[in-house]
Image 1 (cartoon, rainbow, N blue to C red):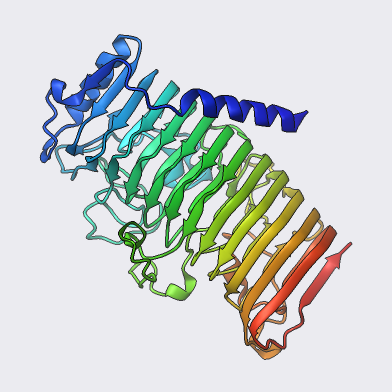
Image 2: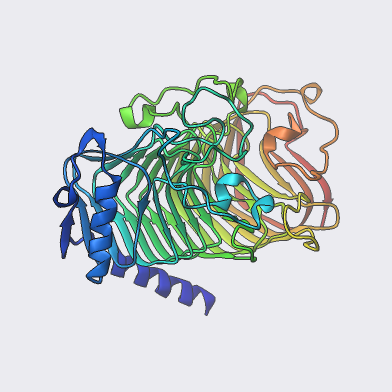
Length: 477
């Protein structure tokens, strides 16, 4: 019943809203936009959007040109169409003018600054219906803040501290919207998030190309979502991540999500778009490339609400992290499947499953659970030797019912027991990441606080001999 409901709803969202029909067209140049890359064009763009909204909806057209802009405020029944050669460029903020300020949020302490606000973005919409952003144009967010420094780029600051008023840190932010499509556009630098969708119902993200320092797509407490045919390069943070923060002031689940035919990468920013695919380089925020986050498809880390009915299939991950499933803030994670996934040159653990007790949620939230995970037709080649597959519950909170079917795991190997840690610590109130453990005591798979683990056709191979044991199991039923 649940599976049928998900499939039918996802299909409706996809069929109904993926077209980019021009319909009633409101050309931004008719409202004073110059498209010369110098004139501030956001007043004209917002005027065109307002005119279309007053008429009941329509297409706001950006023809070829470079449109310097502060915040674009979407409305109901609006299609924002970026034609070929159109570039929507984040403008430089000043002490006198800039992007819309971050709105107040009484629940800001439960998640990072970037997750807690939406208006401080290049494009934003709150409480809207029937919104489309499409076309083969580009968003240039080079002047957006990545959350580590202000938009001037001159001062390194602690991650996720409140930014200066007038600074934007997201390319696209959507909160509690319905029937959303973002299709075919390119985002070259998206700040902290290329796309942040929070509490959105019925969303299709299709054919996107994203190349940014930090997160690509964050799906936070959303329902009935399709992500397909997207190419994402994020060398220092998550590429495609499902989260359930408490930013809405409620436990919003992430459920009925289908992700397919996506390419995830962790190369130096900009070199995916250029076609060079260069390795990442040290920077002030990340002095060691050995600790690069490098993309990955993740469920967590923000995990106050639950996760249900999520399917990831036919995706490739290259020179980046792997598949992460993390309940650290009390989430119940249930019914996730990964099928036909190719992982090459993994920077950390190709499969990382963890329950933790960070509990960055309102008081009273208890440690969560993870159950019913299926990994099928997975191939991982040339993974970093340190970690292998890691599946760990938390004390008496077990990861349960995990299956591996037709899985091939190839590691670089070359390590000995003397290289490895002897005791794998429990994660208490910390950000979860396989690198925090150090070199694992196993070369193939470390399993702790797990019950109901099933293997069918699982192979391990190593480029160089590795004398650590293939499996290390602790407290497994």
